[in-house]
Length: 200
Image 1 (tube, helix red, strand yellow):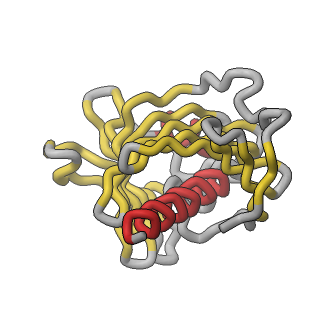
Image 2 (spheres, rainbow, N blue to C red):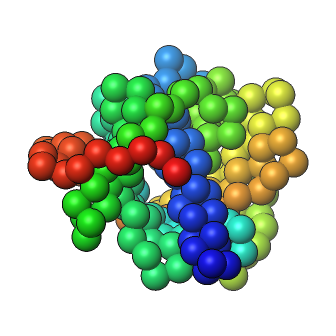
């Protein structure tokens, strides 16, 4: 029973992260701050079209995820404590897809979360420095919105090594493994023939 509760909690946590990614996947109306060395990556996220494979820590557990974002839609595959979860968001709904059981759980979502893992709206380049990230001392550029929300883009040579979010005194590190704008057709499709079940 305890393991079942833990798994459901982790899946709920993963869903919250996915919704946040979906929220930040909407095209930003501003390119403020896209002036520094990390500017090209900032512009990619604010464009609302990208593919990102990354890992992050949450709730004391490592989470691997791969996200595709385009036109306000998002598809995310997450691996949490050995379990894969696939989520698609479109039309103001999130679809949690269980391929082994051939079921789809539909959850209404609200976009515009203030805790987006990759926040670009209203962010401006406000500083730079060096800090420990993923076991290395790396240079970063800091973007902020003047309301206490900060995002640090860590660079390893010409690559974006990762992103550190400091939002409402909470820190979330996202280690980037792959980042490009290759979003395949059909990645946001919901499997036909799967049984729709209620949200837990």
